[in-house]
Length: 166
Image (cartoon, rainbow, N blue to C red; front, side, top):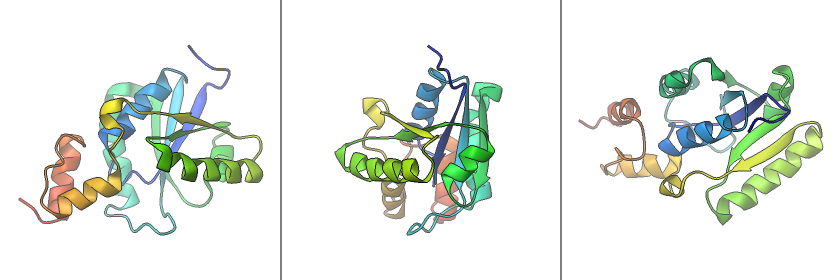
């Protein structure tokens, strides 16, 4: 099934990219011809573990098998402004549980007020990824926990190196 909107934007911090993020990208490609992954350069209240260049590189590596249907770019400022520059009218957001929905709903309504021409589409990841968050993965890694089932192998190695674990 394809929509009347051939492209969508999937914005986020992706610090680091998880298997849940990758799952949502696959789901979005079932609906849209192309997905632009918009990697936020900064995010109020979040101090990223990885630079925007590293996060863009991780996402490009994770989505390489999907070919040119996925484009990865860093951006600064409002995501709705980035979407307009890219001539995209649909924004993908992942919702894992009720606690996500409250925040995401508030953000979607704010974005609608800022840019009524851009619609937010909520997607749910597969049940096996529903509890995964980048924040939780970083906390587990910081405590020497095993995050290998939550992230691609190359991200696992990068997290371990960044946190100085063998």
